[in-house]
Amino acid sequence: MTIQVGDTIPDIKLNAVEGGKIRELSVAELFAGKKVVLFGLPGAFTSTCSKSHLPGFVALASEIKAAGVDLIACVSVNDAAVMKAWAAAHEVGDSITMLADGAAAFSKAIGLDVDLSIVHMGVRSQRYAAIVEDGKVTTLNVEKPREFEVSSAETMLSAVRA
Image (cartoon, rainbow, N blue to C red; front, side, top):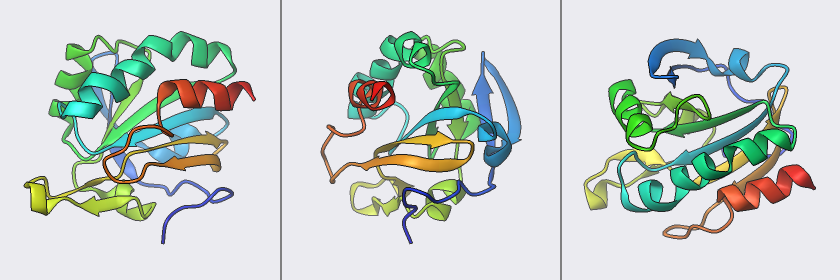
């Protein structure tokens, strides 16, 4: 079942890349007491993810945080080494916490996994963005397949300013 507005983020352990370092953490603990913009995407170094989704959040990170967001987090079904390399390639620095969901455990737990085996990608995350306040989902924007509109950094900036 897909996570809904009002639901609590599951307590899944993931590897995080923060400031170029990798560490294991609990997503529930990371989000506790914070206003978080979380965005999920099919894969690091893939076309829309690398040309638009991540770069948009990198460009608008300071504005999003100035609007009252404590943390911006990106989750993808990739291993921590790939997420670290992707963060370096896009000069993410400390602006975004990169979450490696290598086995798709988080994506499956929130019901936003998708089987992309037909295009040789295996199980991945759907493209989405959410606002999570103290562990509870307050906004959830899930993209239709092959679209990129409702989960953009611009859309989420407007949502946190509302």
